[in-house]
Length: 248
Length: 248
Image (cartoon, rainbow over all chains, first blue to last red; front, side, top):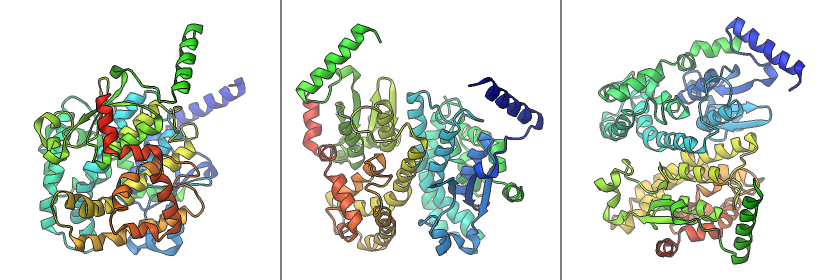
Protein backbone atom coordinates (compact mmCIF):
# COMPACT_ATOMS: atom_id res chain seq x y z
CA UNK A 1 0.00 0.00 0.00
CA UNK A 2 1.42 3.37 -1.00
CA UNK A 3 1.88 6.16 1.53
CA UNK A 4 -0.88 8.28 -0.04
CA UNK A 5 -3.37 5.38 0.20
CA UNK A 6 -2.35 4.78 3.79
CA UNK A 7 -2.97 8.45 4.49
CA UNK A 8 -6.43 8.31 2.91
CA UNK A 9 -7.30 5.18 4.89
CA UNK A 10 -6.05 6.77 8.10
CA UNK A 11 -8.05 9.97 7.43
CA UNK A 12 -11.23 7.96 6.82
CA UNK A 13 -10.68 6.02 10.04
CA UNK A 14 -10.24 9.28 11.93
CA UNK A 15 -13.41 10.72 10.37
CA UNK A 16 -15.33 7.62 11.46
CA UNK A 17 -13.88 7.85 14.95
CA UNK A 18 -14.73 11.55 15.26
CA UNK A 19 -18.24 11.32 13.83
CA UNK A 20 -18.91 8.07 15.74
CA UNK A 21 -20.91 7.08 12.68
CA UNK A 22 -20.44 4.03 10.45
CA UNK A 23 -18.51 4.78 7.29
CA UNK A 24 -21.15 5.61 4.70
CA UNK A 25 -20.50 4.32 1.20
CA UNK A 26 -21.37 6.50 -1.75
CA UNK A 27 -24.87 5.56 -2.92
CA UNK A 28 -23.69 3.82 -6.06
CA UNK A 29 -21.42 1.60 -3.96
CA UNK A 30 -24.07 0.73 -1.38
CA UNK A 31 -25.96 -2.52 -1.30
CA UNK A 32 -29.56 -2.16 -2.40
CA UNK A 33 -31.90 -4.20 -0.23
CA UNK A 34 -35.40 -5.10 -1.33
CA UNK A 35 -37.18 -5.76 1.93
CA UNK A 36 -39.93 -4.91 4.36
CA UNK A 37 -39.22 -3.46 7.80
CA UNK A 38 -41.61 -5.93 9.51
CA UNK A 39 -40.21 -9.00 7.74
CA UNK A 40 -38.18 -11.32 9.96
CA UNK A 41 -35.96 -12.46 7.07
CA UNK A 42 -35.22 -8.85 6.16
CA UNK A 43 -34.15 -8.24 9.80
CA UNK A 44 -31.60 -11.06 9.49
CA UNK A 45 -29.75 -9.27 6.70
CA UNK A 46 -30.10 -5.82 8.29
CA UNK A 47 -28.55 -7.20 11.49
CA UNK A 48 -25.48 -8.29 9.51
CA UNK A 49 -25.23 -4.86 7.82
CA UNK A 50 -25.44 -3.10 11.19
CA UNK A 51 -22.91 -5.47 12.82
CA UNK A 52 -20.56 -4.59 9.96
CA UNK A 53 -21.30 -0.87 10.19
CA UNK A 54 -22.52 -0.75 6.57
CA UNK A 55 -25.21 1.57 5.28
CA UNK A 56 -27.63 0.37 2.62
CA UNK A 57 -30.18 1.64 0.14
CA UNK A 58 -33.62 0.27 1.16
CA UNK A 59 -36.33 -0.51 -1.38
CA UNK A 60 -39.64 -1.29 0.31
CA UNK A 61 -41.66 -4.27 -0.91
CA UNK A 62 -44.99 -4.05 0.90
CA UNK A 63 -45.76 -7.57 2.12
CA UNK A 64 -49.10 -6.39 3.57
CA UNK A 65 -50.44 -5.58 0.10
CA UNK A 66 -48.85 -8.73 -1.38
CA UNK A 67 -46.39 -6.77 -3.52
CA UNK A 68 -43.91 -9.68 -3.33
CA UNK A 69 -46.24 -11.87 -5.42
CA UNK A 70 -46.81 -9.32 -8.19
CA UNK A 71 -45.12 -9.76 -11.61
CA UNK A 72 -42.89 -6.71 -11.13
CA UNK A 73 -41.30 -8.28 -8.04
CA UNK A 74 -41.41 -11.88 -9.31
CA UNK A 75 -39.10 -10.75 -12.11
CA UNK A 76 -36.61 -9.83 -9.36
CA UNK A 77 -37.13 -12.94 -7.22
CA UNK A 78 -39.28 -15.67 -8.79
CA UNK A 79 -39.74 -17.22 -5.32
CA UNK A 80 -41.65 -14.07 -4.32
CA UNK A 81 -39.70 -13.41 -1.15
CA UNK A 82 -37.73 -10.66 0.50
CA UNK A 83 -34.97 -9.82 1.17
CA UNK A 84 -33.10 -9.51 -2.10
CA UNK A 85 -29.64 -7.93 -2.24
CA UNK A 86 -28.28 -6.07 -5.24
CA UNK A 87 -24.53 -5.50 -5.39
CA UNK A 88 -23.95 -3.88 -8.76
CA UNK A 89 -25.03 -6.54 -11.25
CA UNK A 90 -25.07 -9.32 -8.67
CA UNK A 91 -28.49 -10.27 -7.28
CA UNK A 92 -28.83 -12.56 -4.30
CA UNK A 93 -31.86 -14.05 -2.54
CA UNK A 94 -32.18 -16.15 0.67
CA UNK A 95 -31.43 -14.16 3.82
CA UNK A 96 -28.81 -16.61 5.14
CA UNK A 97 -26.94 -16.67 1.83
CA UNK A 98 -27.00 -12.85 1.68
CA UNK A 99 -25.69 -12.73 5.27
CA UNK A 100 -22.81 -15.06 4.42
CA UNK A 101 -22.05 -13.00 1.32
CA UNK A 102 -21.83 -9.71 3.24
CA UNK A 103 -19.69 -11.32 5.95
CA UNK A 104 -17.32 -12.79 3.33
CA UNK A 105 -17.02 -9.51 1.43
CA UNK A 106 -16.25 -7.54 4.63
CA UNK A 107 -14.61 -10.18 6.79
CA UNK A 108 -12.26 -7.85 8.66
CA UNK A 109 -14.75 -5.02 9.14
CA UNK A 110 -16.98 -4.46 12.21
CA UNK A 111 -18.05 -7.54 14.16
CA UNK A 112 -16.26 -10.63 12.88
CA UNK A 113 -19.18 -12.99 12.42
CA UNK A 114 -17.21 -16.03 11.20
CA UNK A 115 -13.76 -17.51 11.62
CA UNK A 116 -12.56 -17.39 8.01
CA UNK A 117 -8.96 -18.23 8.87
CA UNK A 118 -9.57 -21.47 10.75
CA UNK A 119 -11.43 -24.08 8.75
CA UNK A 120 -12.10 -26.25 11.81
CA UNK A 121 -13.76 -23.38 13.71
CA UNK A 122 -15.60 -22.46 10.53
CA UNK A 123 -16.78 -26.10 10.36
CA UNK A 124 -18.36 -25.79 13.81
CA UNK A 125 -19.93 -22.45 12.89
CA UNK A 126 -21.33 -23.93 9.67
CA UNK A 127 -22.75 -26.89 11.61
CA UNK A 128 -24.64 -24.59 13.99
CA UNK A 129 -25.92 -22.55 11.06
CA UNK A 130 -27.37 -25.73 9.56
CA UNK A 131 -28.77 -26.83 12.93
CA UNK A 132 -30.64 -23.52 12.93
CA UNK A 133 -31.93 -24.18 9.38
CA UNK A 134 -32.99 -27.79 9.82
CA UNK A 135 -33.75 -28.23 13.54
CA UNK A 136 -34.67 -24.85 15.01
CA UNK A 137 -36.26 -23.02 12.08
CA UNK A 138 -39.03 -25.50 11.14
CA UNK A 139 -40.80 -25.59 14.55
CA UNK A 140 -39.90 -21.95 15.34
CA UNK A 141 -41.31 -20.69 12.02
CA UNK A 142 -44.54 -22.67 12.50
CA UNK A 143 -44.96 -21.21 16.01
CA UNK A 144 -44.17 -17.68 14.78
CA UNK A 145 -46.64 -18.03 11.92
CA UNK A 146 -49.46 -19.31 14.13
CA UNK A 147 -49.00 -16.91 17.03
CA UNK A 148 -47.53 -13.75 15.52
CA UNK A 149 -48.11 -13.57 11.75
CA UNK A 150 -51.66 -14.97 11.60
CA UNK A 151 -53.08 -12.54 14.22
CA UNK A 152 -51.45 -9.60 12.39
CA UNK A 153 -53.33 -10.53 9.22
CA UNK A 154 -56.65 -11.17 10.96
CA UNK A 155 -56.36 -14.99 10.92
CA UNK A 156 -56.94 -17.20 13.96
CA UNK A 157 -54.12 -19.07 15.70
CA UNK A 158 -54.58 -22.84 15.46
CA UNK A 159 -53.75 -23.93 19.02
CA UNK A 160 -53.74 -27.61 18.01
CA UNK A 161 -50.77 -26.83 15.74
CA UNK A 162 -49.12 -24.79 18.51
CA UNK A 163 -49.51 -27.65 21.01
CA UNK A 164 -48.12 -30.18 18.56
CA UNK A 165 -45.17 -28.01 17.58
CA UNK A 166 -43.97 -26.76 20.97
CA UNK A 167 -42.61 -30.20 22.04
CA UNK A 168 -40.50 -30.26 18.84
CA UNK A 169 -39.00 -26.90 19.75
CA UNK A 170 -38.43 -28.09 23.34
CA UNK A 171 -36.34 -31.03 22.14
CA UNK A 172 -34.11 -28.61 20.23
CA UNK A 173 -33.88 -26.19 23.17
CA UNK A 174 -32.89 -29.05 25.51
CA UNK A 175 -29.89 -29.70 23.28
CA UNK A 176 -29.10 -25.96 23.14
CA UNK A 177 -29.32 -25.78 26.95
CA UNK A 178 -26.71 -28.52 27.27
CA UNK A 179 -24.47 -26.88 24.67
CA UNK A 180 -24.74 -23.43 26.27
CA UNK A 181 -23.67 -24.79 29.67
CA UNK A 182 -20.10 -24.89 28.42
CA UNK A 183 -20.13 -22.29 25.66
CA UNK A 184 -21.13 -18.63 25.72
CA UNK A 185 -22.56 -18.82 22.21
CA UNK A 186 -23.62 -21.72 20.01
CA UNK A 187 -20.47 -22.14 17.95
CA UNK A 188 -18.04 -21.15 20.72
CA UNK A 189 -17.28 -18.21 22.95
CA UNK A 190 -17.83 -15.60 20.24
CA UNK A 191 -21.06 -14.30 18.72
CA UNK A 192 -21.29 -15.55 15.11
CA UNK A 193 -23.77 -15.84 12.25
CA UNK A 194 -24.91 -19.11 13.85
CA UNK A 195 -26.40 -17.13 16.76
CA UNK A 196 -27.59 -14.25 14.58
CA UNK A 197 -29.57 -16.55 12.27
CA UNK A 198 -31.83 -17.48 15.23
CA UNK A 199 -32.79 -13.91 16.08
CA UNK A 200 -35.76 -13.26 13.75
CA UNK A 201 -37.85 -16.15 15.10
CA UNK A 202 -36.75 -15.53 18.69
CA UNK A 203 -37.74 -11.85 18.44
CA UNK A 204 -41.28 -12.88 17.47
CA UNK A 205 -41.57 -15.82 19.88
CA UNK A 206 -40.55 -13.77 22.92
CA UNK A 207 -43.84 -11.92 22.44
CA UNK A 208 -45.89 -15.14 22.56
CA UNK A 209 -46.54 -17.73 25.27
CA UNK A 210 -43.78 -19.87 23.68
CA UNK A 211 -41.45 -17.43 25.50
CA UNK A 212 -41.66 -19.71 28.57
CA UNK A 213 -39.78 -22.48 26.70
CA UNK A 214 -36.77 -20.17 26.39
CA UNK A 215 -37.06 -18.65 29.87
CA UNK A 216 -37.32 -21.97 31.72
CA UNK A 217 -33.89 -23.04 30.47
CA UNK A 218 -31.31 -20.86 32.27
CA UNK A 219 -28.50 -21.07 29.73
CA UNK A 220 -30.82 -20.62 26.78
CA UNK A 221 -32.39 -17.68 28.60
CA UNK A 222 -29.00 -16.03 29.20
CA UNK A 223 -28.05 -16.56 25.54
CA UNK A 224 -31.37 -15.18 24.24
CA UNK A 225 -31.08 -12.08 26.44
CA UNK A 226 -27.52 -11.49 25.28
CA UNK A 227 -28.11 -11.80 21.55
CA UNK A 228 -31.42 -9.89 21.57
CA UNK A 229 -29.76 -6.94 23.32
CA UNK A 230 -27.14 -6.37 20.64
CA UNK A 231 -27.46 -2.79 19.31
CA UNK A 232 -27.22 -4.05 15.71
CA UNK A 233 -30.19 -6.33 16.32
CA UNK A 234 -32.31 -3.67 18.04
CA UNK A 235 -31.70 -1.42 15.06
CA UNK A 236 -32.42 -4.23 12.55
CA UNK A 237 -35.95 -4.79 13.85
CA UNK A 238 -36.75 -1.12 14.30
CA UNK A 239 -38.96 -0.13 11.36
CA UNK A 240 -38.09 3.54 11.91
CA UNK A 241 -34.44 2.81 11.15
CA UNK A 242 -35.48 1.39 7.75
CA UNK A 243 -37.52 4.48 6.89
CA UNK A 244 -34.77 6.80 8.19
CA UNK A 245 -32.36 5.03 5.85
CA UNK A 246 -34.77 5.71 2.96
CA UNK A 247 -34.64 9.42 3.64
CA UNK A 248 -30.84 9.62 3.64
CA UNK B 1 9.06 -26.32 1.44
CA UNK B 2 12.34 -28.22 1.84
CA UNK B 3 13.74 -30.34 -0.99
CA UNK B 4 13.11 -33.59 0.92
CA UNK B 5 9.45 -32.67 1.45
CA UNK B 6 9.12 -31.78 -2.21
CA UNK B 7 10.58 -35.16 -3.09
CA UNK B 8 8.10 -36.98 -0.81
CA UNK B 9 5.20 -35.02 -2.30
CA UNK B 10 6.38 -35.77 -5.82
CA UNK B 11 6.79 -39.49 -5.05
CA UNK B 12 3.27 -39.65 -3.61
CA UNK B 13 1.89 -37.91 -6.70
CA UNK B 14 3.69 -40.42 -8.92
CA UNK B 15 2.35 -43.34 -6.88
CA UNK B 16 -1.19 -41.97 -7.27
CA UNK B 17 -0.70 -41.48 -10.99
CA UNK B 18 0.69 -44.99 -11.45
CA UNK B 19 -1.89 -46.79 -9.32
CA UNK B 20 -4.75 -44.66 -10.76
CA UNK B 21 -6.27 -44.93 -7.30
CA UNK B 22 -7.23 -42.12 -4.95
CA UNK B 23 -4.55 -41.41 -2.40
CA UNK B 24 -5.53 -43.47 0.63
CA UNK B 25 -4.90 -41.80 3.97
CA UNK B 26 -3.50 -43.84 6.81
CA UNK B 27 -6.43 -45.04 8.95
CA UNK B 28 -5.71 -42.69 11.80
CA UNK B 29 -5.80 -39.74 9.37
CA UNK B 30 -9.03 -40.80 7.68
CA UNK B 31 -12.39 -39.26 8.39
CA UNK B 32 -14.63 -41.55 10.41
CA UNK B 33 -18.21 -41.46 9.17
CA UNK B 34 -21.12 -42.66 11.29
CA UNK B 35 -23.75 -43.45 8.72
CA UNK B 36 -26.05 -45.95 7.09
CA UNK B 37 -25.62 -47.02 3.46
CA UNK B 38 -29.35 -46.57 2.72
CA UNK B 39 -29.57 -43.11 4.30
CA UNK B 40 -29.99 -40.25 1.83
CA UNK B 41 -28.13 -37.78 4.07
CA UNK B 42 -25.22 -40.19 4.41
CA UNK B 43 -25.06 -40.40 0.59
CA UNK B 44 -24.67 -36.60 0.42
CA UNK B 45 -21.42 -36.73 2.42
CA UNK B 46 -20.13 -39.87 0.67
CA UNK B 47 -20.63 -38.15 -2.69
CA UNK B 48 -18.35 -35.31 -1.55
CA UNK B 49 -15.71 -37.77 -0.32
CA UNK B 50 -15.79 -39.65 -3.64
CA UNK B 51 -15.68 -36.40 -5.67
CA UNK B 52 -12.57 -35.49 -3.68
CA UNK B 53 -11.04 -38.96 -4.03
CA UNK B 54 -10.90 -39.42 -0.25
CA UNK B 55 -11.26 -42.74 1.51
CA UNK B 56 -13.09 -42.93 4.85
CA UNK B 57 -13.61 -45.21 7.82
CA UNK B 58 -17.32 -46.19 7.91
CA UNK B 59 -19.14 -46.90 11.18
CA UNK B 60 -22.59 -48.35 10.56
CA UNK B 61 -25.55 -46.98 12.55
CA UNK B 62 -28.46 -49.26 11.72
CA UNK B 63 -31.43 -46.96 11.09
CA UNK B 64 -33.70 -49.98 10.53
CA UNK B 65 -33.30 -51.09 14.14
CA UNK B 66 -33.51 -47.48 15.40
CA UNK B 67 -29.89 -47.46 16.59
CA UNK B 68 -29.72 -43.67 15.98
CA UNK B 69 -32.20 -43.07 18.83
CA UNK B 70 -30.40 -45.23 21.41
CA UNK B 71 -28.40 -43.56 24.23
CA UNK B 72 -25.06 -44.80 22.88
CA UNK B 73 -25.61 -42.87 19.63
CA UNK B 74 -27.42 -39.90 21.19
CA UNK B 75 -24.22 -39.23 23.13
CA UNK B 76 -22.54 -38.79 19.72
CA UNK B 77 -25.33 -36.77 18.11
CA UNK B 78 -28.14 -35.65 20.46
CA UNK B 79 -30.34 -34.98 17.41
CA UNK B 80 -30.28 -38.73 16.69
CA UNK B 81 -29.26 -38.41 13.05
CA UNK B 82 -26.63 -39.67 10.69
CA UNK B 83 -24.21 -38.80 9.20
CA UNK B 84 -21.68 -37.67 11.78
CA UNK B 85 -18.08 -36.94 10.81
CA UNK B 86 -15.12 -37.37 13.14
CA UNK B 87 -11.87 -35.65 12.17
CA UNK B 88 -9.57 -36.34 15.09
CA UNK B 89 -11.23 -34.57 18.02
CA UNK B 90 -13.58 -32.59 15.81
CA UNK B 91 -17.15 -33.91 15.52
CA UNK B 92 -19.57 -32.51 12.98
CA UNK B 93 -23.23 -33.24 12.26
CA UNK B 94 -25.60 -32.02 9.49
CA UNK B 95 -24.74 -33.48 6.08
CA UNK B 96 -24.52 -30.09 4.32
CA UNK B 97 -22.19 -28.66 6.97
CA UNK B 98 -19.99 -31.77 6.77
CA UNK B 99 -19.91 -31.44 2.97
CA UNK B 100 -18.82 -27.80 3.20
CA UNK B 101 -16.17 -28.74 5.76
CA UNK B 102 -14.64 -31.46 3.56
CA UNK B 103 -14.69 -29.16 0.53
CA UNK B 104 -12.98 -26.36 2.50
CA UNK B 105 -10.33 -28.67 3.93
CA UNK B 106 -9.49 -30.12 0.48
CA UNK B 107 -10.36 -27.22 -1.82
CA UNK B 108 -7.72 -27.92 -4.46
CA UNK B 109 -8.15 -31.70 -4.48
CA UNK B 110 -10.36 -33.73 -6.85
CA UNK B 111 -13.51 -32.03 -8.14
CA UNK B 112 -13.58 -28.37 -7.13
CA UNK B 113 -17.06 -28.11 -5.66
CA UNK B 114 -16.97 -24.40 -4.76
CA UNK B 115 -15.31 -21.25 -5.99
CA UNK B 116 -13.30 -20.31 -2.90
CA UNK B 117 -11.27 -17.63 -4.64
CA UNK B 118 -14.14 -15.54 -5.97
CA UNK B 119 -16.52 -14.33 -3.29
CA UNK B 120 -19.14 -13.23 -5.84
CA UNK B 121 -19.29 -16.68 -7.45
CA UNK B 122 -19.28 -18.21 -3.98
CA UNK B 123 -22.24 -15.93 -3.15
CA UNK B 124 -24.25 -17.39 -6.04
CA UNK B 125 -23.26 -20.93 -5.03
CA UNK B 126 -24.29 -20.25 -1.43
CA UNK B 127 -27.63 -18.85 -2.61
CA UNK B 128 -28.40 -22.02 -4.58
CA UNK B 129 -27.38 -24.16 -1.61
CA UNK B 130 -29.92 -22.28 0.52
CA UNK B 131 -32.57 -22.50 -2.21
CA UNK B 132 -32.09 -26.27 -1.99
CA UNK B 133 -32.47 -26.17 1.82
CA UNK B 134 -35.51 -23.89 2.01
CA UNK B 135 -37.36 -24.31 -1.28
CA UNK B 136 -36.53 -27.72 -2.75
CA UNK B 137 -35.87 -29.85 0.32
CA UNK B 138 -39.17 -29.36 2.22
CA UNK B 139 -41.53 -30.64 -0.53
CA UNK B 140 -38.95 -33.13 -1.85
CA UNK B 141 -38.38 -34.67 1.59
CA UNK B 142 -42.12 -34.97 2.20
CA UNK B 143 -42.58 -36.72 -1.16
CA UNK B 144 -39.60 -39.01 -0.53
CA UNK B 145 -40.89 -39.89 2.92
CA UNK B 146 -44.41 -40.68 1.72
CA UNK B 147 -43.48 -42.63 -1.39
CA UNK B 148 -40.09 -44.21 -0.66
CA UNK B 149 -39.40 -44.33 3.08
CA UNK B 150 -42.88 -45.24 4.35
CA UNK B 151 -43.30 -48.28 2.03
CA UNK B 152 -39.83 -49.54 3.05
CA UNK B 153 -40.92 -49.57 6.69
CA UNK B 154 -44.32 -51.15 6.02
CA UNK B 155 -46.30 -47.91 6.32
CA UNK B 156 -48.87 -46.72 3.78
CA UNK B 157 -48.29 -43.74 1.49
CA UNK B 158 -50.74 -40.91 2.20
CA UNK B 159 -51.73 -39.87 -1.33
CA UNK B 160 -53.57 -36.82 -0.04
CA UNK B 161 -50.23 -35.51 1.22
CA UNK B 162 -48.55 -36.46 -2.07
CA UNK B 163 -51.20 -34.61 -4.09
CA UNK B 164 -50.92 -31.52 -1.92
CA UNK B 165 -47.12 -31.47 -1.99
CA UNK B 166 -46.44 -32.09 -5.68
CA UNK B 167 -47.66 -28.61 -6.77
CA UNK B 168 -45.19 -27.06 -4.29
CA UNK B 169 -42.34 -28.99 -5.88
CA UNK B 170 -43.60 -28.03 -9.35
CA UNK B 171 -43.37 -24.33 -8.53
CA UNK B 172 -39.73 -24.82 -7.54
CA UNK B 173 -38.97 -26.91 -10.64
CA UNK B 174 -40.52 -24.24 -12.89
CA UNK B 175 -37.98 -21.77 -11.53
CA UNK B 176 -35.17 -24.33 -11.98
CA UNK B 177 -36.29 -24.95 -15.56
CA UNK B 178 -35.97 -21.25 -16.34
CA UNK B 179 -32.57 -21.04 -14.65
CA UNK B 180 -31.24 -24.15 -16.41
CA UNK B 181 -32.15 -22.74 -19.83
CA UNK B 182 -29.11 -20.49 -19.62
CA UNK B 183 -26.88 -22.36 -17.23
CA UNK B 184 -25.53 -25.90 -17.32
CA UNK B 185 -25.75 -26.25 -13.55
CA UNK B 186 -27.65 -24.29 -10.89
CA UNK B 187 -24.89 -21.95 -9.75
CA UNK B 188 -23.23 -21.61 -13.17
CA UNK B 189 -21.55 -23.75 -15.78
CA UNK B 190 -19.72 -25.95 -13.28
CA UNK B 191 -21.03 -28.72 -11.04
CA UNK B 192 -20.92 -27.51 -7.41
CA UNK B 193 -22.19 -28.46 -3.96
CA UNK B 194 -25.41 -26.61 -4.87
CA UNK B 195 -26.21 -29.34 -7.42
CA UNK B 196 -24.84 -32.16 -5.27
CA UNK B 197 -27.04 -31.24 -2.30
CA UNK B 198 -30.14 -32.06 -4.41
CA UNK B 199 -29.05 -35.59 -5.29
CA UNK B 200 -30.30 -37.62 -2.29
CA UNK B 201 -33.96 -36.62 -2.73
CA UNK B 202 -33.75 -36.81 -6.53
CA UNK B 203 -32.30 -40.34 -6.35
CA UNK B 204 -35.34 -41.47 -4.34
CA UNK B 205 -37.94 -39.48 -6.28
CA UNK B 206 -36.81 -40.83 -9.67
CA UNK B 207 -38.15 -44.20 -8.45
CA UNK B 208 -41.60 -42.76 -7.71
CA UNK B 209 -44.36 -41.30 -9.89
CA UNK B 210 -43.04 -37.83 -8.95
CA UNK B 211 -40.35 -38.61 -11.55
CA UNK B 212 -42.70 -37.17 -14.21
CA UNK B 213 -42.33 -33.67 -12.71
CA UNK B 214 -38.60 -33.78 -13.48
CA UNK B 215 -38.91 -35.49 -16.86
CA UNK B 216 -41.55 -33.12 -18.24
CA UNK B 217 -39.17 -30.15 -17.90
CA UNK B 218 -36.46 -30.59 -20.55
CA UNK B 219 -33.71 -28.55 -18.90
CA UNK B 220 -34.39 -30.00 -15.46
CA UNK B 221 -34.40 -33.45 -17.02
CA UNK B 222 -31.01 -32.89 -18.69
CA UNK B 223 -29.58 -31.56 -15.41
CA UNK B 224 -30.96 -34.48 -13.38
CA UNK B 225 -29.55 -37.04 -15.83
CA UNK B 226 -26.16 -35.34 -15.78
CA UNK B 227 -25.76 -35.09 -12.00
CA UNK B 228 -27.20 -38.55 -11.28
CA UNK B 229 -24.71 -40.15 -13.69
CA UNK B 230 -21.62 -38.85 -11.91
CA UNK B 231 -19.43 -41.81 -10.87
CA UNK B 232 -18.97 -40.32 -7.39
CA UNK B 233 -22.73 -40.24 -6.92
CA UNK B 234 -23.29 -43.77 -8.23
CA UNK B 235 -20.69 -44.99 -5.74
CA UNK B 236 -22.18 -42.89 -2.89
CA UNK B 237 -25.56 -44.60 -3.09
CA UNK B 238 -24.17 -48.09 -3.64
CA UNK B 239 -24.47 -49.90 -0.31
CA UNK B 240 -21.83 -52.42 -1.41
CA UNK B 241 -19.25 -49.65 -1.63
CA UNK B 242 -19.92 -48.78 2.05
CA UNK B 243 -19.46 -52.39 3.15
CA UNK B 244 -16.36 -52.79 0.93
CA UNK B 245 -14.88 -49.74 2.65
CA UNK B 246 -15.54 -51.42 6.02
CA UNK B 247 -13.47 -54.43 5.01
CA UNK B 248 -10.48 -52.37 3.92
